[in-house]
Image (cartoon, rainbow, N blue to C red; front, side, top):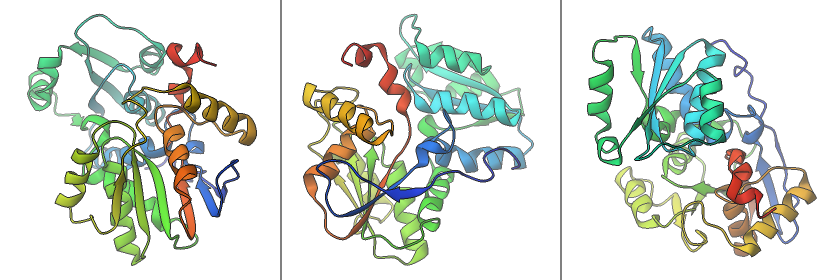
Length: 289
């Protein structure tokens, strides 16, 4: 797969945030690309490779109106010369900066009701059964191809950390990290900070793939649920951005960073910046800036 993604610019550097003590580094996956960044690219990487190997020319996926995955797929498709389509979970007409940007990159958006959205394979078959060049990617890029891409993060580290901590919504990144740790033979632990109230569901997925001894899902840092925030969290995010010059968002990375500060984990650690900073510029959050 020859593209600007061939040489990932994702440096590892010391993390210097007020209140976070110890030997902690930050994996800057947010620098891979302005929009196809963090775990969004890691999850897409092998899906796209396999699509190209099968001579597919259209990527078809699924997501909500504020999906970083949809936007990343649209941008990656445009960069790599692939058409993109997404089934959009929307019971009513909706528009925002995520969807405008996705359309700008040429993505075809097909709004479907929440009931229809529950039957994703049926949607793909109905719309693309007669288009052999279409390649289906699960919501969020989930699946074994995503795990393979995320595992590359561990393989690229210059040392074996005691732990890797990151924001987690579906456990896909956590599982990929766990598999990367197994492949490298490290004794590293993964702390997946649940950013919505589904820690039990994430733990179940991790148990099913046999990674419970490596990956621990941390709850208590959802701040009310997905995309919800509080004034202290917003202040922490704003102060950290001003202090470090690194964009964090209140939906994912801000919550994980808060957890890292509170937990004061021992040993040498890595904070994985999973990208997705577009959420910071949602109208609801801009009003709190």
